[in-house]
Length: 137
Image 1 (cartoon, one colour):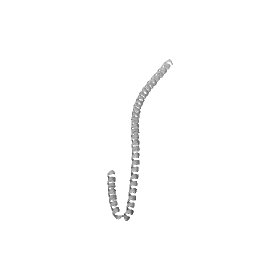
Image 2 (cartoon, helix red, strand yellow):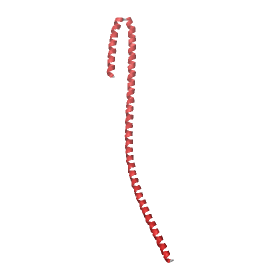
Image 3 (cartoon, one colour):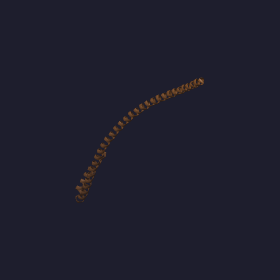
Image 4 (tube, one colour):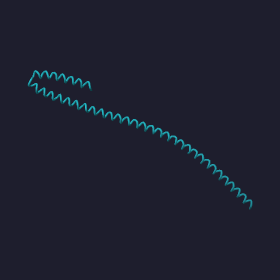
């Protein structure tokens, strides 16, 4: 019976050795997997850093463009305001010309010869004004 005890101890030792061998292989595989995961994480971190740098650069460019657009918009607003003032001035001049023309017309019925000369001068002035207006556009 002692032999059976030795044989069973030998079988148990062999089974334990096989178990240890499989455990070592499993741990080696797990170590390799963990190294790969670590390498992958490093690559992902590098890519994220690159994306972050590019995003910051793009954000800076966007801010610069927005500042430029705002500056140009403000200058256009000033220009539009100036154009509005010019338009009002032209309307005032036109209104004045109409009043002058109306009063010349009324006066012309009273003094036709003098009025004819004034109308000629007025027409000449209106022509000059129209030419000037075309040049300024």
